[in-house]
Image (cartoon, rainbow, N blue to C red):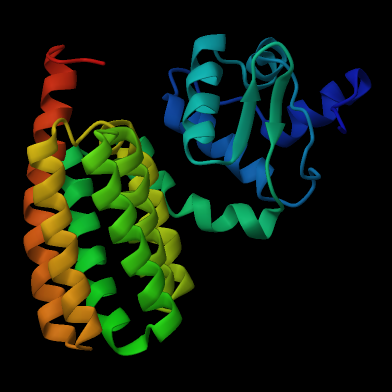
Length: 255
């Protein structure tokens, strides 16, 4: 893997520049993001250690550490314990990820993210009803069968995985790459709660019924019905995620 050379410290400092005194982690992350998407750093490059980045930016290591952690959540960097931090993808691949930056560094509430996700998912269901192919429809049906099988086996973790795959494939079938990117971003920011939102078999079966209602509308190629069914699903799913996020915040039921 390519790495920054020790003799390139001056170039890094010049590229990053010292930040104003008292800058927030968001400013540190934004400066790093600007550098990463400039195209001057090859994919797979190992970044300088935290102390070197902190010195170049004239900020504390904790600010750099938090900024890199946020960039990792967005899939922009890969933090490998004992090895270092590596840049993922090319500049063109990273740019769509930057769309999410305002949401993350602005500390938007979970409620706002859930509202955005609901609107996007409802729109996806509406346009997918007109655009998805028979093959894509069959794939969604297969995901539903996997969800049903995981409930019967009591494997809720596998249920959540099949659920996420269903939503991803539905978004893909809408045929809008920007919409897909935006949904991926929102889901990544909600992922810590999405992965643990379904807590028991009753919730899983309710979620399965909601997915099935959307699926039946898609089979009928009824865009209005698909959007309506997805709206109903998002209402209950958002309520579950909100409760889970509140519990995590209060330290209740933490995994």
